[in-house]
Length: 261
Ligand code: 23J
Ligand code: MN
Image (tube, rainbow, N blue to C red):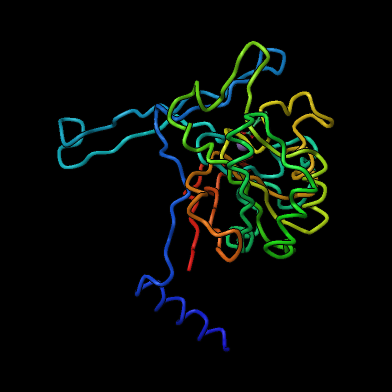
């Protein structure tokens, strides 16, 4: 098939609804939960603030517009390799220099909703990825891997989303070995539905925050606070997630979309 036929078929399928666009983004606003790191880790990121410039009034008679206070790592967002010390010297490691081909790619969705529902500290292992591959096919180089946990259903309240007690936050994520295995497959990104790309317990792992440490060291990307992954097939969808072109940005809120058929 010629490349023009591929796109004209896609265009037709979008128009007929045979290909659907699924929004896998959480709402972004003052209520959006933000990460809380304990004091020994330093400073925290602020919540979103929306300031009105005008609202069809004396400050702008025919128009409404706002300006926004916003952390780079807020809501459904993209982690660039320069976000982590292990990725700080990589080429094209900032939101404005990452090659755009990385923002549109096939996506594998590993469903661990049952496991994470039973155990909020659930960690994805190499064995369970290999089981998934035996069932759905190998994870191919250049693709994204997302873990479905249905954790997005807790997004909306900081308390249920971070799920912290006196021992710290409890939310699912990958083991270091799982990330190493996925990198050996050549994936370009790892994403999940929790506040960050790592488990709540990841600060105590080796290395600390292994998804951040290892993915960004390999000059690969992360997606956090994804929603609606229960609407995606295990294989066959196309992920579209592009960070704003912040100059030297370490990350950015995104409108993450999936094409499904
Ligand atoms: C900074 C420190 C630890 C973490 C994070 C940021 C994130 O999750 C993030 O949004 O990148 S775990
Ligand atoms: Mn982040």
